[in-house]
Length: 70
Image (cartoon, rainbow, N blue to C red; front, side):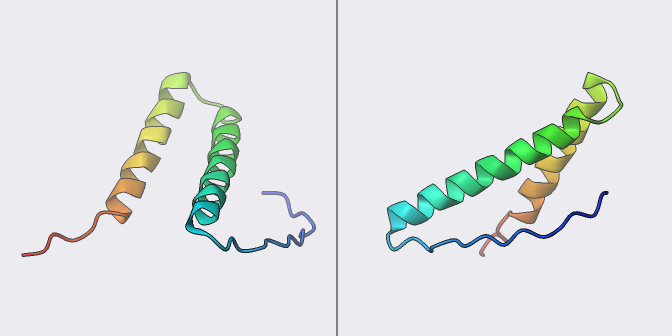
């Protein structure tokens, strides 16, 4: 991965729950766009790309599962 110069970003934290939800949605969309662009650049078949996406989804779901209460 290339080293790039850091960028400093100022984010004003939302003061409402609605604002926080919007920030979370925008951050998630940016992250998803980045991941998609990285996957599209891979030198492998569409099927292999799809398999990698599905594996990432499974890992994310596994990490965010809440333990069952008894």
